[in-house]
Length: 515
Image (cartoon, rainbow, N blue to C red; front, side, top):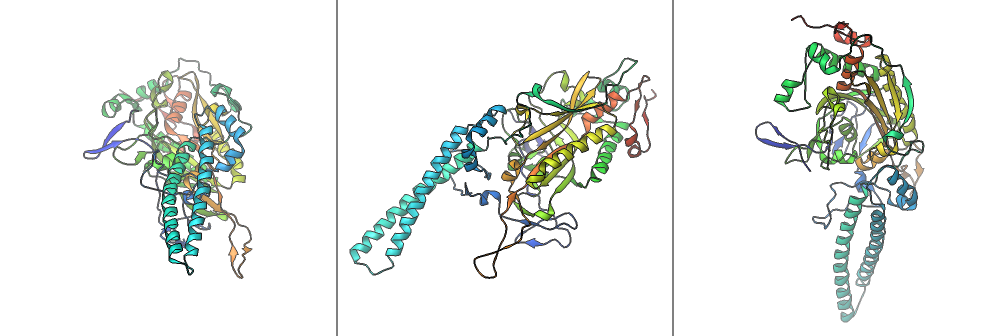
C-alpha cells in the first residue's frame, strides 16, 4: 500500500488517509446546552441534543473496550443489526454477490452465534456469582462460608477470562461485519457499469462547423489554465487557473449556491482536514489499496475527498428532534483525491485532478422521506445543468458500481466534445441508515408521551436512525471542461452561459488575449 506523503509547514510529516471529525460549533442564540456539549440548529428549528454515541447505545454489540485484543481493534463501533442480518441471510448474501463485495457473511454469522453463546455463559456465571453473594449475607457455618468464598473466587476468575474473550469476540465481529455493504433498492439494475439504466436524457450534442479544440488547448490559447507550472510546483494532475477562469470558478460556485439555497438548503464551509474514523464511518477506506484519500503522516487525520465527510460528522453522536428534520445543507470545500489507479486519455487535463473546488448537497431526514429527497437532489442537479444548456443523461447506476454506503445512486454524465464522449459530472446517493448507524445520528419521533409505570413519569418514544443523502451540485473542473468545450466559437473565444454572467461582472465572452 503506497501512501502519498506531504510536508505541511516546517518539517511536519504528513501523509494522506481518511477523515473523522467532530465539529463543535458555537450555538446560535437561544440554543439549549445539555451536559458538556452544545449543538447549533437552523434558526427557528427545534434543538439538537448531544447524546451517547450509537456505538454505546447499540444493543447487539455494546461498546466495551479493553487495552489489548488478538484481532485488529476497531477504533469505533457501528450499530449493526446482526439479528436482522441473520434473519435475512439469503437476501444479504445475494446483495453481497450483486455488488461484487468481498464481505464474508458466513464469518459474520458464525462470530455472531459464538458471541451470543459466550454472552449467555457470561450472564449465567454472573447470576451464579450474585447467588453466592446473597447466600453469604446470612448466618453460615465457618466451613460453608469458606466454601462459598472459594466458589465466589473461582467464579470471579472465570468471569474475568470469559469477559475478556467476549470483548475480543465483539471486536472481531465488528471488524469483519463493517465490510458488509448497504442493501440495494429493488429497482437498481443488477450488473456492472454497462448495465446501468438511462433514467433521463436532456438536449443533444452541439454541431460544430469548424474544427473543435479540447479544454486543454482552449485553456492554453485563452491563457486560462497552466498545467506546466503546477507540475513543477506540485506534481502532475495539479493546475493554476488564470484570468477569466478564476472568475468562472467563482461564478459557478456562487450561482450554484444561490440556486440551491432557494430550495431551502443552508450554506456551509467545512473543515478540509478530518479524523480518519469519520472517513471510515462514512464508508470510505482511507488506507486501503488504491485509496483515494490523502492521510497526514503521524496523525489520525486526512484531507477530505468530498464535503460529504465533514457534513456527515457535523451531527455525529447526536439525537435530533423529529421536528428539526429534514436538515439540508449545501457546502463549499476544496477536495483532495489521490486518483490512484487512474490512467488513460479519459483522465487528461481538468477531468481528473488531485485538488479541486466543489459544492456538495447533504440531507439528513426521516427514513420514510429519503426516497423523496433523493429525487429532489437529482432534480436540482438536472435543473442546474439544464440552465447551463448542457447535453446530459441521468443514469440509475447498477449494483456493481455502487459504493458500500449507497442504497441507490444516480449519476449525471454530460457531453464533452473535446473527449468525444459523455463524462461524469455529478452523482446523487441515498445511503439510508448505513452512515447514521456508524456516525451515531438518531432522531426522536414526535409521538405523544406514554405514561410510565410510576405515576407522573412519562416514557419518551424510542429513537431511530436518520437517513443520509448526498449529491454533487457543482464539481468545478468538470463543469469547466463542459463549458469551455461546448461554448467555444470559431474565432477561438468562449461564450459565458447567460445565468453565470451576473456573477462574472457582466463578462459575456472570453476572448483570445492580444499578443
